[in-house]
Amino acid sequence: MTVQAARLNRDFIKDIVSYEGCDTAAMCYACGACSGVCPVEKVVDDFDPRKIVHMVGLGMEDVLMTGETIWACSQCQSCIPVCPQNVRCADIIKALRDEALKRSVVDRERLKELGLFAVVDPGKCVACLTCVRLCPFGAPSMADEGYAVIEPGLCHACGICVLDCPAQAIELAPSLEAKGANR
Image 1 (cartoon, helix red, strand yellow):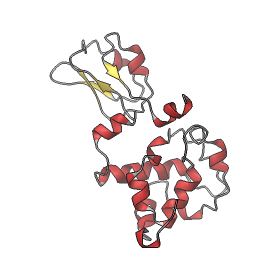
Image 2: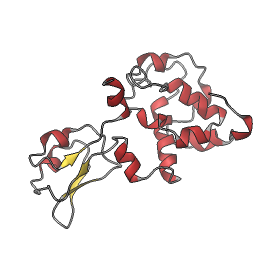
Image 3: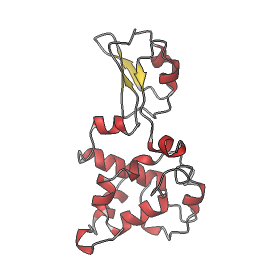
Image 4: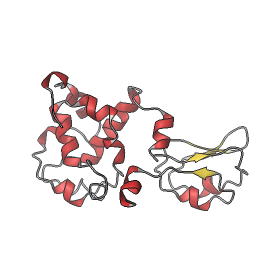
């Protein structure tokens, strides 16, 4: 990847470090401890938490905000305890996602395509409340119209609701991680 200095936003890191857990982003010295434990890095081409943090520091705002890389992270947080500088890669990636949502760079449909939250087909839902009872994150709820809906901000895309829905009314697109593991 060629980096053009004119396309860098030197102030981008200021936007990201304002998020909780991101204040040490500039302390990364690219040792690779995070990459070594990252399960996603093993299966998704071009995903490397160390590179993402470095790109934030460089100001590669456009690449990070418009690409798919930040959406591949499973948010398992395996990278956090191994960093000798206390850089919280998963938190930085979450901040990048939040910033992309805040700027409307991605929409609900794109997140659905990336497999980041499950979706209920209202025509198939029988309002049995199985998803509501089983979700450990409280993402599903019942709409006034009598079918389940899933709050994207609460859904962790774990697939529990998909597997246990007796009406098979819930779908979850394969994540970038799942696609990479299946190649």
